[in-house]
Length: 109
Image (cartoon, rainbow, N blue to C red; front, side):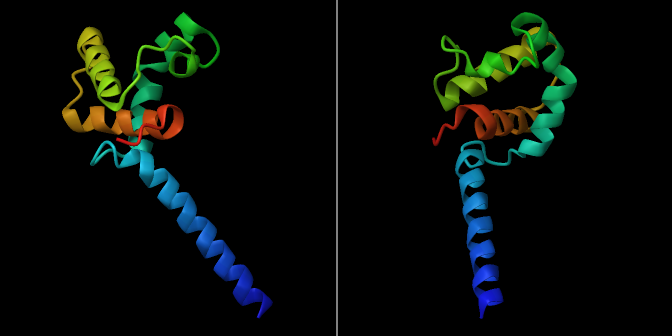
């Protein structure tokens, strides 16, 4: 009986974690945060780190950050894509937005 309760508790906890993660990735349909993380590591981190220090993630969490909405996040990603000549397709932008939203912004719509 104790094992069943433990197993049930673990299942509930896992589902809660999945629901929590899905809450923020659903804002960007089709976006895969794990793919987005790879794109950011390959294309963004070095510039962000040189501008903001450390691992560069403070660009997302600073008090005067530019991105205030889910649409603003998508626009900023598109702007960086264009300015840096990354030539990302829309789905790649969705992946990046999904990763950033899940880990830093937490926009729900």
